[in-house]
Length: 268
Image (tube, rainbow, N blue to C red):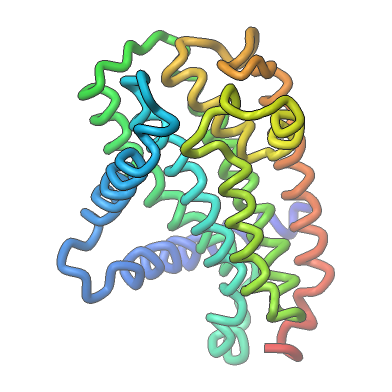
């Protein structure tokens, strides 16, 4: 373990450069650059509110905040997983020429997308003030689901990056699975509007649990450590489940990546 920790600190400056490079390439030849990090979720929320507001958000003054919070978290997971999945193949030229710990590529992909996600939370804060969301001190608990989201993103990124080297069709399959995950994350609808059987299915989606916990402390003045969300699901149960799922995914990702990384050079 000490060997891997020492290796991480030895290459920390390279990790920083890969993160900076990822951010620069994402907005290369873009006039607005990082402004898109704030503008894109705002425009998406406006479209979703116009489309679904009259059907699913009738009478809810905070419906745009409901959509925006779910959309931001889902987009973070989607971006982190897709970029990390392609990270080994995208950097195959460097991998073939220079020795660098290969985990730096999916890790840097997750890091720079997560940093952009944190920047996009600025627009969520501004929108919450505009729509007069009444905060309580429980809002500081929002850090917990955000940390769990980061762990889940790294774990999923390592697993996908490993499998994608040997099974390239995963890129197309994952796009379909992400669409399924999106519809099972209650981004633009509420669980109160669907049947009990669907609630039972959605509660096993760790990303939904993260989104629900985040909304609870942001919009519902609740706590993650007691009570329920608006759908009657236990906040502590969802918190523990999403945390355990994310940690297990991270452990599996680390083991899987470490076991197969020496074979990457034969398949890229």
